[in-house]
Length: 488
Image (tube, rainbow, N blue to C red; front, side):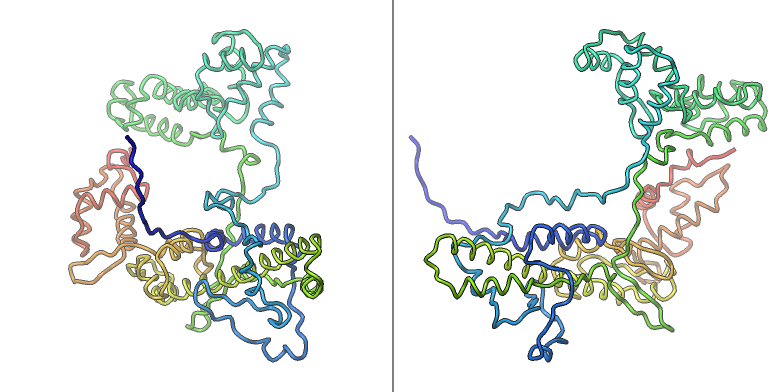
């Protein structure tokens, strides 16, 4: 028998306005412009440009926007003319974008990029020169459509047979498909349509001068000794092929210069994205001056015509049903416009407060650009400094960048753990990584240092860290283990 019960729980949920502000805060500058254009299109009560103040309002024109997070005033118009707070409480008016807190469309949105000739277009164009019949051409197009962005076909031929049968009603087999694939593999760029890295390298080597002894040896290494090559067991390969050091070096050099991702070589198929810094930091005679990218500070205002329309409707009779619907529509648009202006201003304030705290914390680095001057800094340090939540700082740091005299840096670059040296001084883990990279760059590549050796060398320099930490930092720097760093 089921029992009915009543439980009282207390949950904390973000309001729709807070959710929209969070989404607005975390998008980078490049996407902000698109977001503003979208808002201008859907809300006629929002306009670009400075607000035109009357002479009576001019005295308050220079008032600073200095509100705590979530309390922006955004009064670009006379409150006597329009008080949004008065009507925002109306029960019959829905709030601005009263939607659920599902995934943000802005989070996954990419900036539109001018389209050009893609890798697939280039391959299909070359397919036209093979003089295939209609059936073979369709099979060739299916194969080209199965090529990944890096130039490989990772789908099994038997699966492509099924795709052709169900999708295009073409009955074929793996042998016929493979014959056409071999012809596609002769297309440019070299190595395209390979089914593995080994096949990709072989396809590229086969296009080189076959009379060159180094090419011949390189082919034998890739075709017959590929596993040993990937593990850099050069001594075994050299002994097996019975070749001298000079020829071995030439062959290895030839292989390492090949392109492991031929699809990436099609420039027109690569999305080009430019980094637009959110902040600009200038060193003015030893004094750091921080400013927000002007694209983050758009000039927006409430439409004067919509404000006057609201006043007219508000003074009219409320008994007319159509008139009441018109009033509701205008109220909603004015509410949305005011909220959006406030949110943009609050975004500017939050960004500046966060960046100012980072500059203050890493002042020595920003003066000289010396990575060794970076101090240990975590999100909590900045959150405490500006009296905001860690999640807010995280959203700013994860998607924003600053332009300095030493280049453009993502804000997350300045956050790192602290490590205590033998002298008792706290240093950034980024500094330790910098020293570690210096040691590895200077090592004898014929006898590269193991992680244990690297641990000892770091300790000699005053950085007592464990071997597992050395391995972790090495992996974060994308540096392989000692055996794979070995060179002839």
